[in-house]
Figure 1: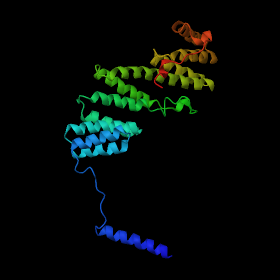
Figure 2: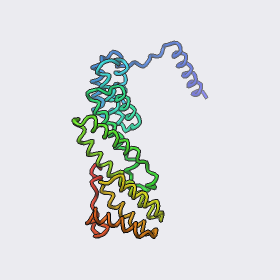
Figure 3: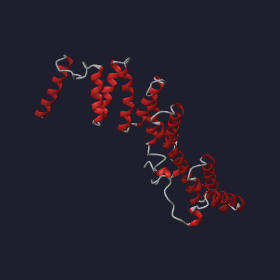
Figure 4: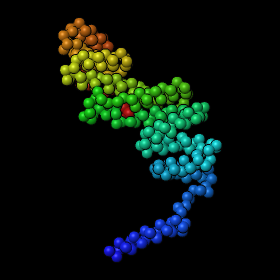
Length: 265
């Protein structure tokens, strides 16, 4: 009982002291820092992997010195720090903000590239092929968004140092998106939904003509049409498959090699 009374008295005293201004306020150690020092300290925190601290410093820099070159650099660094922190929505918002505010900035190409990377590395959706989730429910939005960012970079800044890698990733994304459609088609086929399987496979063939995954898509079309009692359509799919992939594993029984779309993993 006595301990409880002492604790209550201590809390009451703290409240009184606080209201009277006797408790010291938390001092911001950065309040007198110059723009260059804020930037330098933020970069050090970033290099050390202290992304939250780095973001705080960069945000203070942008707030206190909004019209200098350091502020623009801070905006870019904030997007990168959120990306490294694994904070995808915040990173995308920061990258989009920079592109909108500084469309003619000499390094805006990097922000297009970073925006593509942020979506490209979203492995919780489209590329989680090894999970048990129904593939028809997976959302390829992140892959589409990544492709669009890389495409804009390649078209607007063909000489950018980031463009070659962006183009390589675009090829990967096309193959991955095609593979996603094939996964869905396979899923429907295994469950006897042959119409849905044929439609998905046809979509993959028409949309991703050069993707390795269309080999399997054509095979699924062939099998689906056969299962539906449509021999002519099945034979048409088989003819295209044999003409396009004369050494297809689906006819030779050979062991399938991993497609090039795996190379970034």
